[in-house]
Length: 58
Ligand SMILES: [Zn+2]
Image (cartoon, rainbow, N blue to C red; front, side, top):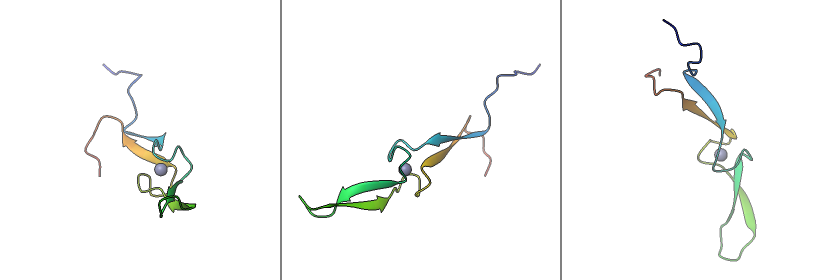
């Protein structure tokens, strides 16, 4: 018996770290100007690939 509402194996979700902006603005120096840096959480993609059920699919 199949479950039609089964989640996909993997889904793309917006990166919660950079909010989909693909970069983070950080101050290298305290009080200095903000410099855009590539978001380390999504590697600059703006989205993250999340496994649906943790299925072992490399
Ligand atoms: Zn990100």
